[in-house]
View 1 (spheres, rainbow, N blue to C red):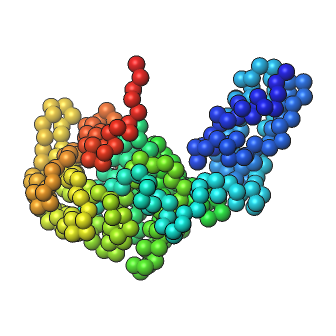
View 2: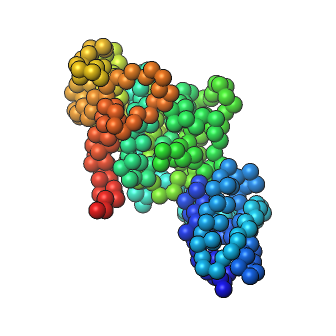
View 3: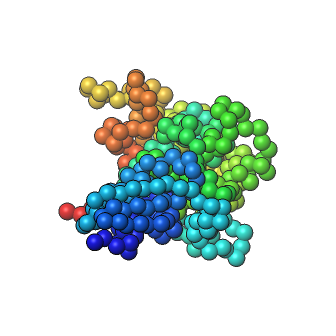
Length: 361
């Protein structure tokens, strides 16, 4: 006959899909009852309207049904009390730090930070950020993205989660995860299409909240999609993240390259290493004959790299979007291959190559 201890042990393998922690570890399992092979269990969710309640319920049923002697499983989904929720949040946050510095910014944290920036809008900086994040996640890294382009946020749209909202437990935000990437954006917290009319100090506070009030878990790398130019937000990020590296995005056009150089110089003058240049929309390649057409000319990437004493890490070709709805490129496309190349280069630049899990077989 199955026992309560066996049921509890089986449920240790069930993770909350948002926080990736065991429901047993997080004390979400309540009231296990067993009668003649029929198991009843109550699961306490953080909020009553948990968007992944069905996923959790099905996982619990599957694990219990795998036990010998179990004939049926009944799962009741409840919600935590205020006291239980506070305890849950405390477990997620971990021990309180002796300083007011957000956990992600503590000196001992091993997360690497990479700020993706450009001199002007329209060069595809956010698309580069999103596809690089996806490629890094595909390589086996734990990846997060802060959409720090407060006025022109577009990361949620690129990932196809614009209409979603993150779960908030007390004052702790659980980032939305898609394509293996955890995402936080101002877009999640303002009414649709409403402008953000904030001054510099308010923007800095919001960014600090993204570091301190979000449960990122153990990240290998956090990408920051910075606004174009050298304004308040970019300066705040440079001050908050003294160890962040910089990746500059430009197009082949010289006017884009000139302003990209200024963005890179800001990083260098605040002691942030520029680890490479992405020349986006570098050329169009015919899918039939392979001929490359340089619609926007040549040389912008080299100009930026020379001025900043770095290298053009990758040249990303234009894509004929057609009916394609997502700016996330398939791995087998020539753009996807370019982002895999970029991800590999960034892993080495950030010292993360050793963090990639070994492939068995």
